[in-house]
Each structure stands twice: as C-alpha cells, then as structure tokens.
Length: 383
Image (cartoon, rainbow, N blue to C red; front, side, top):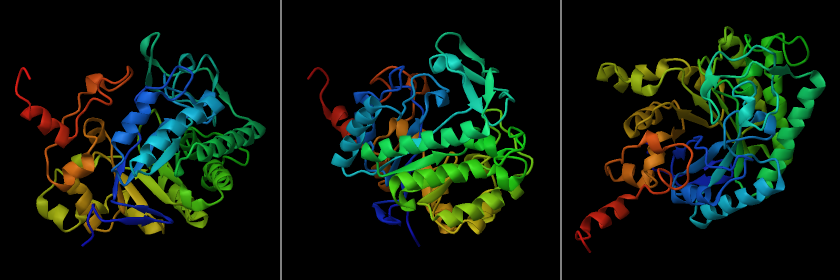
C-alpha cells in the first residue's frame, strides 16, 4: 500500500513525500504587503514538507482583505519573496505561492482605504479583524466589477503570476475557495450577473477558468498551476444552491486544463467525520461523503485533501484512494519538522493560538524541532 512518506511525482516536480504544508494567514508582512525576513526563516524551517503552499498572497491591492498579508504586485514584493524561495530551496524544499484575491471578504481599512470589489454588490454577512476596531462587520461598500473591469482584474492575476515565477516559486495555487473572489463568481447567491461571467452554472465558472488560463500563459505550462476549491462550504458568508451542477461543470473544465492538482476543502472536517464506528472508517464508508467521492470521480488528476487531518486519517484516505496528497495546517505552526515527527511517531508540539498572528518571531519561528527540543532538555539547569 502507498504511504504518506513515499515520493510522489507531481507532473514534472518530484515530491519527497505526500505531506503538504497548507496556506495559513499569519499577518507577518508589512502594512504595504512586503514579505519580511522572518517569513523566509519560517518557510525554510518547514522545507521537509513534500510541498509548501504559502499564505494567501494578493495579486491586486483591492484583494487585500486582511491586515498585514503579503502581495506579489510590486518589484519590492517580488524581491522580498525571492528571499523566501531561495531560503526554502537552499534546504531542498519546494514551494507554491497561493494567489488570493479576497473580493468582498475583508474591510477597506486593511488595504489602505481602497474600495473592495466582487462579482456583485451583496456583502458578506461575516466579521473581519481590523487593527483600528478589532472584529468588525465586513465591508458593505462594494463595487460590482463591470465586464471590462473583470477582464482587467484577470490581467492583474497574470501580471502577478509573471512576478511569482520571477521570484523563484515552483508554481501557483489559485485560491478559489473559502468565499474569496473566484468563489464569489461560482456562487449563485453572490453572483447575480447576466454577462459572460454569470447567469448559468457554466458562466459562473468562467472567471476561474479564465484566471487559470492566464496563469498558465504566464508560467508557460499548466503543470505548475493548481487551484483550490471548497464545494458547499459555508465560510466567510458564502452559500451555494447549485453545488452539483456548478462543480460538475467546473471539474470537467479543469480536466481540460491539465493542472498540477486540484485541492479541496471539506464542508465538514474529517476530525468530526471520524466520530464514527471504526468499521465505517476501515471499510471506506467515511470517504463516500461529499465532496471526497464527488471530486475524485470527476477530476482526472492529482487531488489534494484538507480538513483537520491527522496522520491516521490521511493514511486511511490514501488507502481508500480518495486523495493523493494531504494538507496539514495548524500542526505546521508549532512543528517545523512535522514530516519527521509523523514518520517517527514523535509527539507533536501543541500550537499556542494566542501567539499565531502578527508580531515577529514569537510563535512563528521559535518552535523547536524534536531534536532541538530534546537537546535543550539535556542541558543541565544553570549551564
């Protein structure tokens, strides 16, 4: 049987294992979205992952919904990201940038006061953290993109992809999930358009497909371009009523693009699904819930799964053939050597979520590896 620790051939990129460090917003960039040196160390510490996917990174400043998240739209940002990719590659790692435009998700105080945009003007019924006012309702001051503006924004993604390649990344994952802009175009509730980007399930997939095509054009191959989707998830105020119709069409169109992979996030975490009799897990029944089987049956390429995974759950999903690679997020915050810990059944360091956002090194680069932890314990007190 295949193991999480086997090599995996991701098109032309060889991964040493099937464990993926997932994207996690940590608010460590400057207010202008420039990556900081501490980010280079953080990612390099975790280079033993089969693949690293960065935190969501905006291709256009209007897509910065959260405070202090990085961009890839300027030369200064490109140069700063080069320090990150060089550091990861120096330790033998592989790293994709996650391209994230938040659309209506966020607040203009987090992006310097720019009006935020979406597929339509329906605001998100959700909260967002701002430095000025703490948790606040997400912006209601939305601009509905015209058809021409939509095409212009697609070109913003392309320009950012050119910079991403120049910065030394191994590829790009388009964030089309979690209620962000591409997801807003997919949803029949947030997309009220009647132009070429809305009105039918097929047309609602057009924005995502056109963005992916321009990312492919920027890279020169589809094999280093990927996408993340989250069918039927309820997050950031998103809702969908035509899930099967929309995502059947979308997955058919993604098959035509021959991407590196499709990543998906479950609407219900695997941790909660695991609260079932063991025989249901063993015989594979747990993996027959949407969207695992739905995605696997319709998409012909590599599938990456996420959703509060553990080593045991990921291995069972691999055994059942429901996904190929597996994302770990929170565990990577506090375990830079997560691959080695799981492979050797070493205990995991708990994550202190109180230290997870903003600031500099504390709670970010100061978590020790297992070897460092044990070496520290052997040092006599007072030495």
